[in-house]
Length: 278
Length: 307
Image (cartoon, rainbow over all chains, first blue to last red; front, side):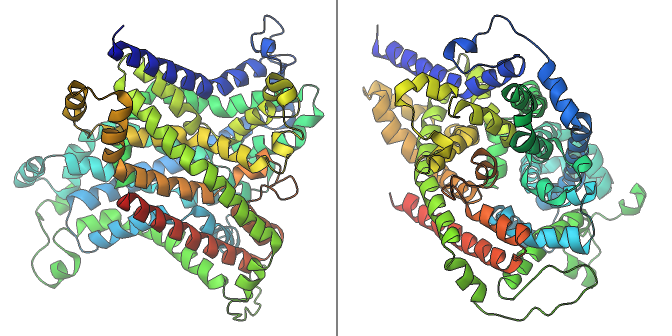
């Protein structure tokens, strides 16, 4: 065996072991969620019987699972809508048009990436829940996430990569700026839209802190918040608390994991790397 | 506005308007919603947070007016003399000392390994990214069970299991959280390193190979130096993420337990600002946290430039 083959085998063994460590908790989650009595022994990791959907029914009894799912969908859809319209427009303006203030806006965006959301938490809470009276509303939930700055970076990067001649030709043919954007630029950045949908989706869907602060009414809480309450308060009171926690974890995790596996080719290194680095 | 409205205007007409708005004022129009968004959701709260930290501030019901007298550095003094606040900053130091080096080393090694293999590469990538895209709340549920007193990890360890168990042990709670966050976030940093590795010329590796350089040698003398800029980014981003720790101590160790051994500054901001109604002290903690993060980011920039 040559050194080269040996190195190759070592690399595959390293990656396979690491991948197992990364995937194992998901396996544990799914198997446990479908078990009548999830055990904690290594042998119990490969159950042969005792399958049940009871755990999912249990959560549904204690918290409005569908309502929480709907709240998550509305929250996420609102953010996607804002990002795909205003974020795309801003990315285009920042890359393809010359106007006063463009440079300043770009520098501000870079700065924004550095400010932790948690510092803004208190004043935002005062503003949104107090001054605007948007506590327990979808608008209040969506507002701080409405336009995803990383997405604006990604759009800008994609628009920058388009050849300038295409835009010049359209303008010479008499196309107005709105038309250039609508008929030339947007169709060409379709792959960027898929990337942006994916990275924007995981933000609000997984977000805990902000909706946790802004929703006191249980019927307005998105799934992540409802589930966190369930894990820390309610799960201990049901017959099979471990199964119930894992079933809840599944309900929150599966939509994102499925979406990610379907569209993983759009979650590529170059797109997002460029976005993060500006 | 119809499309024909803008058709004749390749550029704004020359004159004062053009001088004021630039060549294509349409760009300002397109960016305006985003500018307003940044101003209301980022700039204004940022200024407001710094402002509150210098005043004696309490929440008031809408329509009520209470004086908020200027108190100088009083809120900062209150924050810095509170042993619970100091403990939360010490906890974050423990967190960063474990999380940051692990993150940088592991993500660089895994990204280089992924970059070197062709078969199964997509499957491996999915495995690494999935924890990153999944909600922390659901993964915390799983980790709580894995690391509980009679959980799978302790069952496997048998007599070696720590007592008290991981998440309720004051020496192990914070390191457990640091390990959890490393695992959860690693995929994102692997992604960044993979992007950077695509720009490292393949010839460098090939010529080193023909010169007889082994894989370790190539990693140390080609990969690590070529990735310096990305390492800086990974350092800064992992410091920011670590300093903003909230969900994990809130849920995984039930509110920073045991007995405050895993509180974080953001958890303190939440408790002081929203639960106890002291937004002024909470804002002071926030400002201190940002200054600390800024200093650490600056230091890591220096470090990666020099070495």
